[in-house]
Image (cartoon, rainbow, N blue to C red):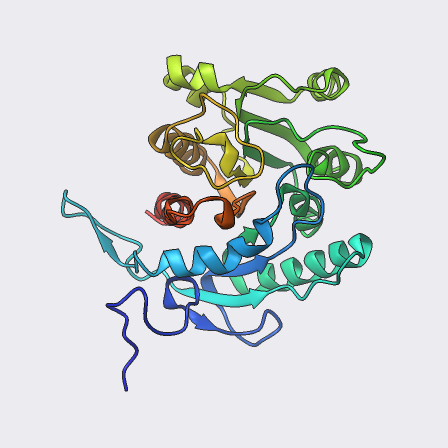
Length: 302
């Protein structure tokens, strides 16, 4: 029996029905996909551990190559491989970090652009450790929150701290641009520390009122890692996330920021995090997340 590729609810769900091969296998691909089903570092509502599977299922709605109303076909000839999920220990964060970093390094050796399906945002720190060899690494982070807190609830490893830990551990990480910031719960010390390091902090309001100005503030001509926290989007658009904040970005605004970063730079990796499909019974949150990944990749591989 042939694979029912025309039926998104049929068959075995790998990302865009890519071949499932282990991260240490002898394969090469344009895009490699790795799931990181970890949400033990959340401060509020759990569920991001279920996102990798949900994103894979949602991706079956849009299988490349994709042809739009304008007749342009995107992602034609771009090869995908699904490397499965990192096998993560329960309640052993240090061991989990090491396994995530190791799997990400293997994935980097086998594809041009790794895509990581989180997981809560704490996983961005061990993922970024796999990029310690990339000179002058820049991060473009879409997020309602800064995630640069030193310590929260007596831990240094929560989803509020991944970029603080990365900035401390990686001398090659030279700059972070965070887009979509808003809300009432900012840590003043974290804001001051990020600004002291020279990071670019851009509010959701700035995107809403002056998108062209925001795009002009993105890195240009650099090696860029894209980190997409889905709470950057307005919760009326994407409700399935642990810590929603009102008045966020539209899908189109988020995509334009990601497209702007992709067009101006060399994208070395992409993660999408903080999606909690259990918090959205409609299923639209994972559909939007999967589409955002694919549309961003269409900018990376025009």
